[in-house]
Length: 311
Image (cartoon, rainbow, N blue to C red; front, side, top):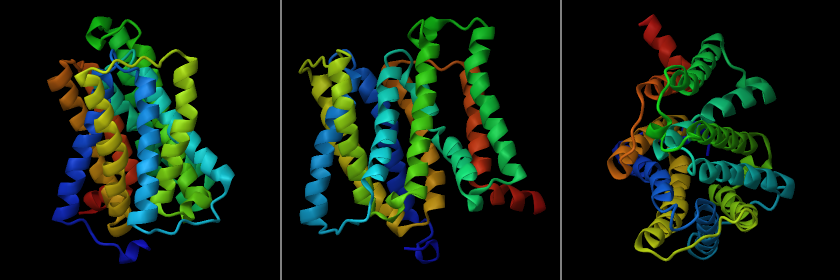
C-alpha cells in the first residue's frame, strides 16, 4: 500500500503505539531481571523459536496470508543475520551494562540505517541538515561513553566494572538493527508481507542464536517464577503479539510518523529500569542520549525543522 493511501496517525494508533513502546521498553528489563535464572542468550533464542512457530500458524491458518515466493534465500538469510546479531549483542551486553543503557543504545538503529541507505540508494541521500543531525548523534554517542570516564564516573553505578564493554555491545545491537532495516529496504525482502519478514527474523534468530547459547555455555535454565514470567512475556507478548500488531500498523498508517512515535520506547525503557531494577542513570549518559535522539530526529524528519525555521 503506497503512503498516499495510508491513514494519518489517529487516537487508536497513538494509544496502540504507546502500549507497544511500554512493552518494548520492558523487554530489556525482563531479560536483565531474569538473567541469573535463565541465561540471556537462551532467553532471546527460545523466545524467537516459539514465536516463529506461533506466527507461522497464525499467518497460514488464521490470517490466510500468501507469502511472496520470490523472496531470495540469500536476502532472507541477511535479514535473519541482522536480527540475530541485534539480540546477540543485547543478550551479551546486558551481562555487563544496565537495561537503561541498553534501551537507549539499541535505538540508535535509525541513525545507522539512514547513513547506510544514503550510501546505497541515491534517493536516500541526506541533506546538509540531516548530516548535521548525524554529526550531533555521533557526538552524543561519544559523550555518553567518554564523559563518564573523564569525570571518573563510578563503574559501580553502571552495575559492572565492564559497563563500557556492555555499552559498546549495545551500540553494536543498534548497528545490527540498522543493517536489518537496510536489508528490508534494498533487497527482495521489501516485496514480502510484513509477517513473512517477521517470520524470517524470528526463525533465523532461533537457528543462529540457540547454537550460540549452547556453544558459549549460556544455556542455564532455572524454572523460577521470574525466569518463566520473563520467558513467557517475551514469547507471547513481545515477539508474537506486539510484533504482529506492529506489522498491522505499518500496513495501515503512515510509516514515517509511526517511526517517530517509536522513539518513546527508550524513555519507557529507562523509567522502567529505574523503577523495577533500581538502576541509576548518570547525568553524562543522559546528556549524550539527548544529543543522540535530537540528532536522529533531525535525520528522520528534516522537513519539520525546516518548516519551524521558516515559520
